[in-house]
Image (cartoon, rainbow, N blue to C red; front, side, top):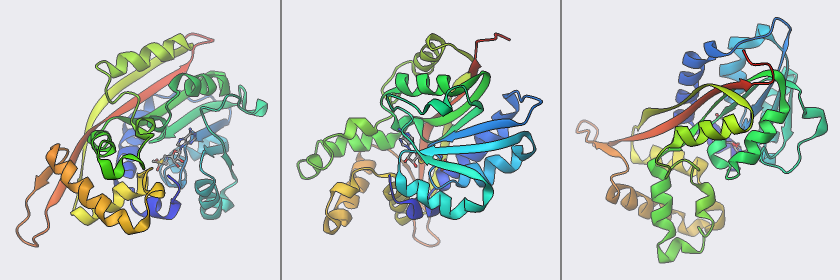
Length: 281
Ligand SMILES: C[S@@+](CC[C@H](N)C(=O)[O-])C[C@H]1O[C@@H](n2cnc3c(N)ncnc32)[C@H](O)[C@@H]1O
């Protein structure tokens, strides 16, 4: 996902869930008496970090770093929040090597709606572990299961979209088909040395007020459109809608007053709070 401007305007679902997680889970993190150095992974357009998280923790924080794999996202957030003394850097959290200056640097690492994009979960969490201080904490939330992934899978089988969606499996949450997603993630984190305080999957729902908005929000995170000629985008979304209806991927709320149906999407968020267990508490 590279269209930072579109994402900024069409992220109601992500924003409402990040707020929910910050409001309900931030209290489980322990803060050091010293000023803390924090990192946000997959910071995207920077809004969640700068407008939702930081205002709640600013007095505890000394330095803020944010990384994202997309240069467009990094440039967008530098432009939007350039005056805030935040270091926005381009970086892949699943890279084979992380910069040495990031080793053991962070007291707290956050990530909102990014880690389901990362196929190599082990490498990502190893990197995160290495970047934490020995008593450092993490708070993550990302999509565990979402009917959007079933739609991707179905559309990737369709003759006319197959060639554009060859790598669709890369974009399905690693936990979407898992029968025991929290156990799987919990085991991985423990193997890597984390002490896991919370690893849970929460059912959430979001209602798109009409089909146009739903399409725009899907467009903002769709990884395949960049491969599809613009002249075929309308057809892609017609097929997206019919596949969505066929799979019962959303609940349609019939609205008679303005003739626009609303679409409720039910999905599951993974929420994790863990710390480096070098000094077990
Ligand atoms: C849905 S956006 C979330 C942005 C922001 N955290 C929010 O909550 O609105 C996901 C972000 O993760 C980034 N991302 C995806 N894979 C990544 C990776 N391997 N390393 C770092 N960032 C990644 C994408 O470029 C995108 O900006």
